[in-house]
Length: 342
Image (cartoon, rainbow, N blue to C red):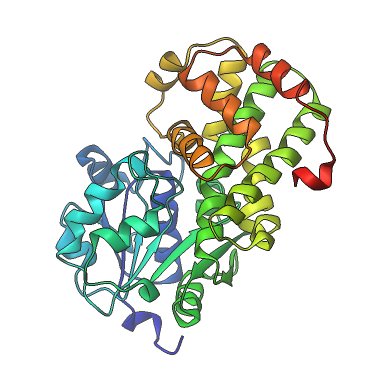
């Protein structure tokens, strides 16, 4: 990257916890960030107190990040736009911002999910929704990064993937700071699938913890969950090595074990006996694994990929299966060689 920071125009679309952390990270680096936020309440909080008390409480946000409800201000004329929107709103938001995206702009999806109706990833939704952008000008960001820790400048590492190495390189240098290290990849499919699939396994891990089954069970679940992720990824054309990297194993371990994981929290409450409807009604932030479980259930059948853990999570979420029944089915499956399963 040869342009000085003052000459690079950056926008962020999305005012949730991760969108706030990304906007704050870029602002701390010295960029003037135009930041689109849908919720009027959140915009006003940030303008008045420099805090997003709903989605990222306790973090004093940089004044270099300016909230707006104007897509034109956040997107038009930008060199890089970070799109950080829940998967079920992503298509609508991408369509609304499409008229303001210029040919020179690089779009970076930092969202983790798979659309239920179409089973498209977020980068595929960008390609479908923004006609001015070619696939080589799209990148995806993923990795083991809790928003609250990145916002507090805890040393963190992530991966940015693009079909064009120059795009990945540029975004890497835009995002990198002494506390946020970024690696590049050309495996867009793999990085996105890792970010989506690990949330389902995190729900399962939370159920294990809610049932108080112990560390042996959780370690086995994470390991076999990774095998399922890799199987579907390979069926969809991903590089299997991606699943042992930051976007795969790194993010999987974080989300399956960290107390800050919304998906793990949902699973834990299910394991403790709370109904899903009650859990979700009490959450303002999105646990992407709940919706992604439906997409992955359909994809595994479409591509004939065996994913027993993800299948059981789907049954628990959408067919009222009990965690105890799910555990019994998993533990009494036909015995196999591990190598053949992986």
